[in-house]
Image 1: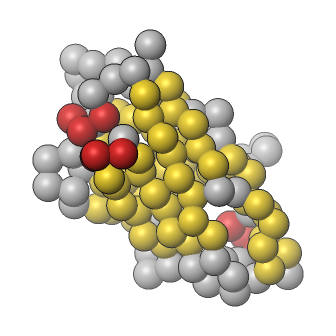
Image 2: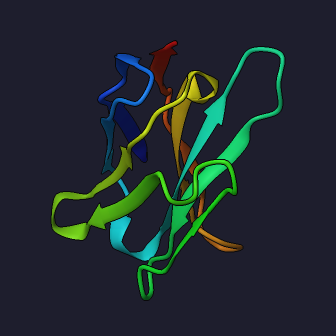
Length: 118
């Protein structure tokens, strides 16, 4: 059974930085595209960043582009989200997602809370 565990969240001042990590287990991490989402209570879950399995190409939402960087280390079964120049509106629970496409199961982590104070 696949599992994703996120760490690295916390309280940071506006303008600060955090690095989130998501460690995968129980499935073939290297063949999965990986993504970070964020969830604010009462709002739609938002896709933040993704990285492909094939060529590690990346995509970002417009709200974080230029401030956040997603990366992966297949040897460690880990995906990272480096978040710089944080803003209060980045406050959310950040969740890791492993997308297997049409033929493989997908997995969600439970999330890690990021709070940015103004």
